[in-house]
Image (cartoon, rainbow, N blue to C red; front, side, top):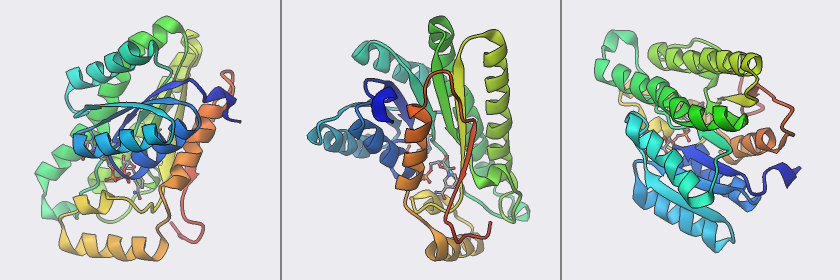
Length: 250
Ligand code: NDP
């Protein structure tokens, strides 16, 4: 299974914690060359060191996905360092959930900027390369919030629905245009990461913390799904994965 992973160059956004960190470590252990992006470079430095100590290959660079040029710069880092780019995992995101009536409009803007525009910026940064080489794999972290509406998720759910729709159109158009760009969209449920620290609304934070205390599972589970998607032969795409705790009702 790991043959199609070895040697692949993979950019990961939001690689400084949680799902991105777990995925970077797993893919590197399978022989991928990983390029880590996030804002907290102290964390990225430590993760890259851990990967190298374990015998893997990793580089990192400060990346704010809301800044177009920084997305282009990390793609350039991947190509300059490793000579090519095979996969981008668009995983950076935040979830400051709250009731609409709380009018946390700054947080609405942040979610749109990171969860929506961050994905667009990442895709725009890799498309010239993937189109020219007629191959490439775009993997994105949506959420079960991209499949279902729930209280407190008015804006977050909307951003993750966007990812679902956009990725499906990207898949369809790439197939029709013959560019062989594959896509995979992942819909995690409760995964124990730093994500809940982005919630500032007290009642919403309490409700989510209780839910995750009851059901949350390790981000390693999502890393395994990304590993599977990357491992598939180039003529095959699994477009969507819904993954969560076996005992979580929604
Ligand atoms: P974490 O908070 O642990 O990780 C979020 C990552 O996103 C961090 O590496 C953070 O890095 C990065 N990030 C945030 N803002 C930016 C930015 N502007 N530019 C670049 N990177 C940024 O949470 P998760 O691992 O859970 O989150 C990963 C993805 O999974 C998100 O898209 C989230 O919505 C999604 N998800 C998570 C679920 C869960 O239950 N945990 C469920 C469903 C989906 P830094 O702060 O260093 O920039």
